[in-house]
Amino acid sequence: MFRRPMRRGRPLVRAAATTAVVAGTATVVSGSIRGHQEQKAQANQDAAAADQAALDSQQQIADMQAQMAEMQAQQAAAAPVAAAPEAAPAGGSTDLLSQLNQLSQLKNAGVLSDEEFTAAKAKLLS
Image (cartoon, rainbow, N blue to C red; front, side):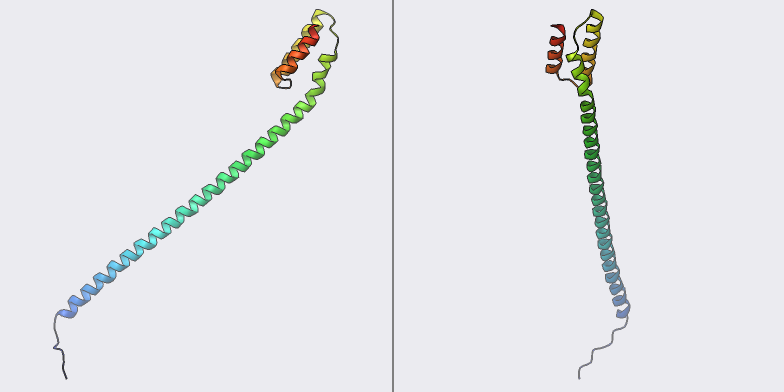
């Protein structure tokens, strides 16, 4: 039978080499794990930012819808007021000026369009 001769001094070198390989492998693995954890954390942050942006957009849409409803309510409430100056007869010059001022205020408030203002003014002046 063939026996290998015993070598002295090699087990220490072999142990050092094995330790170096294990340490290097552990470093690579821990770096890889850290990288994956950082990527996952970044993905979570991106998802949270996207969720917040969606909520902000929904809130803006709700705010705009509320503003539109409020504007429509104001226009509906101001519509009978717009008809009153048109139907009122032109009396004295002070009454005519006050009616023209009312028309101007309604136009500036956005209740009357340019065409409606022009028509109402022409009706008052005729």
